[in-house]
Image (cartoon, rainbow, N blue to C red):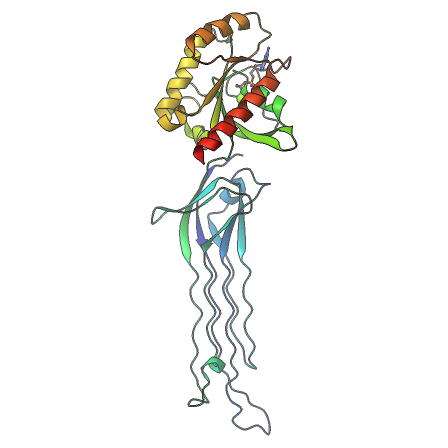
Length: 334
Ligand SMILES: Nc1nc2c(ncn2[C@@H]2O[C@H](COP(=O)(O)OP(=O)(O)O)[C@@H](O)[C@H]2O)c(=O)[nH]1
Ligand SMILES: [Mg+2]
């Protein structure tokens, strides 16, 4: 199951109370205060980890609660602090405070963490209050309450490149050919039910991540088909690769298909629709491919590529073009 949005409640642990105690030993009258401090409550830490790819492990539970700190004891024994609870999420997870409607943290990097609910501090034992003027204090403090929050966790995948195109255009096949990702592939629409990420390695120091999302169809922005919700997984991609198949099995016009995906992107988010785009005519070995490639060339101001995931035609050209464009767009951002 692929989950990219969950609402949970997190409750940090309470701090342990400070202890009130006096040393009582034979031959030592009025031995003085010896109550220890309470331990700290556990915090709820959310951490972006490379081996997690969606939020399903978090979705099975609504309440996440860290343990309380232990109270202090006599003989100046401090209570033990509770361990923090760590929730592991994929990089790209945005942590939102639901009640107050603000972003607590956008965990974009692997290894980044946020303390989503701080554990309560332990209370002071009466030893702490000992002074020259008060040698037998009875005063202690209680442990603090742990923080409580309602959180929305929303995953917007981190991928350099987003693949777009009609269902059946060949997106998943291309991803599996270029990377080690193994998305589902079949000759019917909507085989891909959730986004897949794959890293494409050109050589030792040149690589990038591609996201394959379920196919768009016209009206996706209005909730038709698999809907636009998956578009958020390419919203952070600097470059789009738009695949168009030359001979759609459903008999649709490939040129119309190209235009409708463009319109769909613009309607969802103009900024996304304006990202640099590499257009590819797929399935190059099919008879109609050449002719459609020519036709599309005259329509666009930049030449589309002609590729085949079956024969490998144009794939090196595509990965180099992607890399160059990524380099150019990241320079512009700096
Ligand atoms: N002839 C040919 N068929 C392809 C090529 N790439 C993908 N296909 C086929 O097109 C169909 C849809 O591919 P898929 O990758 O699932 O498309 P997606 O819906 O865009 O992800 C499958 O039957 C693939 O085998 C290609 O380069 N040449
Ligand atoms: Mg697919």
